[in-house]
Image 1 (cartoon, helix red, strand yellow):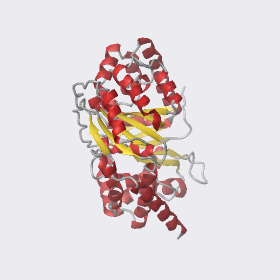
Image 2 (image 1 turned 90 degrees about the vertical axis):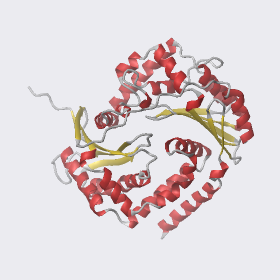
Image 3 (image 1 turned 45 degrees about the vertical axis):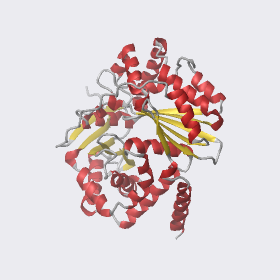
Image 4 (image 1 turned 180 degrees about the horizontal axis):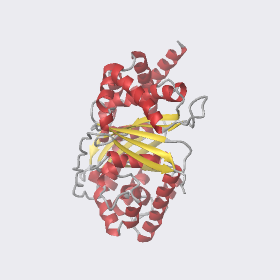
Length: 447
């Protein structure tokens, strides 16, 4: 009873906070150069944010320039015409602000948080680096070295990245999701000045961006500043669309990778539809049913009951094009009360058995309602502040096709049934649709 009451209180609190913002509270306008703005006025605190979503990620690259999208996440902070190297951060911090950025396979997003009185300064800063980014050769070489180090260090320090990069490459044979967001070492070393200038001109054009402003601002303020600073930046020809469609997979694929590790790691990845597909909500709930807490099917079965894994997690990415649903597990060193090592084959068989049970028998109403409660609480928490709201609005506009769908999400999660869970598991999580990867300890050299 106390648990149920706790969930009700949290959900109600989230609903109250969420109820303060409705779809009709989101105002939008589009500049003559094609950049769309979403604006939400929230005067609860004297802060605001500007999230700039650029429709560019590793899916827009090609062999020879992989990693270039992520590289611009670095370069955009390294000086333009009005504000020189490191000035972007210095000026923002002097105005009580901070910033960050992230790159995915589909988008590059820049996040500015600031006191609302600095709104015009933020527009000035952003307009400068959009229109006049300084792609200085010396700065390029410096950041090229940073990215190369980031790539090598990431692979060295992360077993997950080491294995998943190879699984991803095997799962995609044609689509540009084949390569990692950070790119390949040889390509990072080979980008030319012409590559960089053309890429920025094409993908950082206003008609390829989406701006979201949330906080202690007015629509009139934002529109006036957008027209003053952003509208003079000319549009560019629309980027070439990504034409390649990943062919259907008709058989299991397997890869093995070796590394200096203690116990095997295992990844299984299945092809699933793009985020806009109606099955997104059932698949998202399925990932929680598998590893969203100690009582979740895979966590309980592998870590606590059979004790064949020390950790396991499932996830599906948000993608413009069909993506992957992945289960990743780290094997225990030995079987319980035994010196028998846990092999990847044994761990894989245990996962297969648990997934087969869901495909055949589904899950219970109680299990599903529990993860729905968890998902709704997570959802409300993610949008209860201005930063979460800005990120969510941009994400739904781009990945789901309309920011208004953000306000439909709670009901769409609630509409998922146990039959939907069994159906998506039986449709997508099948052996012929998967790629399996083993990360194993480096074999001992034999004389």
